[in-house]
Amino acid sequence: MDNSLLGNADRQPFPKNARKWWNIGETMHKGRSRDGKRFRNFKIGSIQYTILYQHPPLSILFALLIFTVFAITLTLSLKYILNPDREPLPWQAYCSIPSSTTTPPMYRSASPYPYLDLSSNASSVFLPHDLDCLPPTGIFLGVFSMDTSFERRMLIRTTWASHPRSRNGAGDGDQGLGTSRTVVRFIIGRPRKDWERRIQTEIELYHDIVILPITENMNSGKTHSYFTWAASSAWVPPNYFNRTVSRQFSYSNATSPEPLLAHHDPAAAWEHRSSGQSKPWVRPDYVAKVDDDAFVMLAELESRLRLELYSETQKPYGAKGLEAGVNVTAIPTHSSSDGIIGDALSHTGCSPLSAQSRDPLVYWGYLVKERFMAGELYALTWSLTEWVSVTPAVKALSKGAEDKQTAKWMALHPRSNEIRWSSERCWIYDHPRSGTVYSHGFLFPSEVTRIRQRVLSYIAGASSTLPLNVPIPTEWSLSSVSTFGVRYSPPLSDMSLLESVEALVEGSHMSRIREDSTTEAEIAWSRRESRNIRYENKRVGGTVVVHFVKKHMWFLETALAMLDDENYSDK
Picture 1 (tube, rainbow, N blue to C red):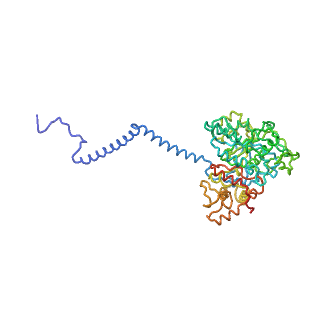
Picture 2 (picture 1 turned 120 degrees about the horizontal axis):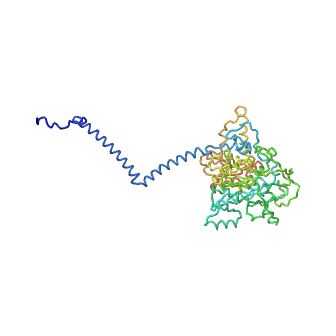
Picture 3 (picture 1 turned 180 degrees about the vertical axis):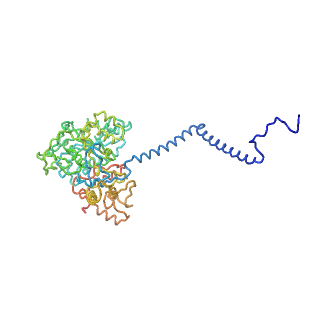
């Protein structure tokens, strides 16, 4: 039956989820929330899409920025973790207690530093009283330079390479006897095209530059190239003085005609040339490498290397005279025609040479972390130099941090256990203004004597109450001049040049001024020590190398502190 009142019987019923009038507002609110969320997601996605796809350069820059931040953070973290120079070094202990051995680190237990063996009775005096009985040592000193470094080369030529204080020592000196076989040459790679003429002119004028057949570099083989060149071309003056007879080594009979002399070559070489008595030059006992930011006292260096050359055993470096395995060797029986240095050894009475079956094997320098000799200056005896030049395995290790690579070479030597790793950690240090862990004031023997008394007094008192190998006191790292990690500031605001240099001397009255007082400064200046007192009336025994002399002004300050002839007061 067609019943229009009942409507269409085929029409579907209302869905269960149909919107109802009584909750229509709530439903609309939820819809708006969903629509807003969709809009935000769409907007973020659009931005990302725009950056990453529509603008590829922006995406690349964004990725590079993130990677750069990560790389810098990682690098700084690793640099801090791996940096061995995070804390100041106990340099006062280094000056008071000698290195315990010259045995290579890989063949012995680790050094007690930074701990002290309070049971050690080793002497801290390294120079025997009869040092001058030993024949002068032949040293070829190669200063690593660059074609552009003319000013630094001139500073070196006119200061430590030639100055009497550097070559003769303190006091009356030895008239140049000790350094009569020490020569200084500058080592550079091939100069760039626009520097070739200037370098050639400099060579013609000074006769002291060696050009290696390599492109200039620092850690890409220059050091190996230098030692390879030295093995065939390094020569030094012979022993001009009949009063000292050198021990014969395997290379002692090799000679070469005397070369053109440099202005800063030994006075004895110039004297023999002017008198028409030139002699052939011979092979050096040592070939040394030095950076041009180092200030070297030649007489001090030669005395250390001389003593080590004639030490016959790996005994504690630092003992006196024959206790250190040194056999004094000069024979005062022949007359001399030495001119300006003729009477230098007339008063000596020394015993004859002892025989030695093998050439000495010595690797000398500042031993860093029981691993390698620091690159500011280290020396190899002639036998090691020759071996380095002909060994293929060594050449394969010629690239990388050059001082660390040299230590690796020594480990490859077939007699590596016999090489004497002789370390000098007291008298090699960084410039007072540098602020490094190796930095303190300019150091002289009189101050080291005072430091040694304090350190040994502490050890004597502590040895009865404290266990062995106790941590060192932090006071042994302190300096009256500089503070690790802090930029140097003069003690007074208005100082003359000489006063400012005196303030850089470790332990000096000027360095201890803490109030900006003119009266106090005048008193401190009047109490400065004379050079004779600072060297305790000895010729050698003080600073060997001041390193990290980065600025020319720092270099001149060092020259004034180390070479100044004025003897001041004797107070």
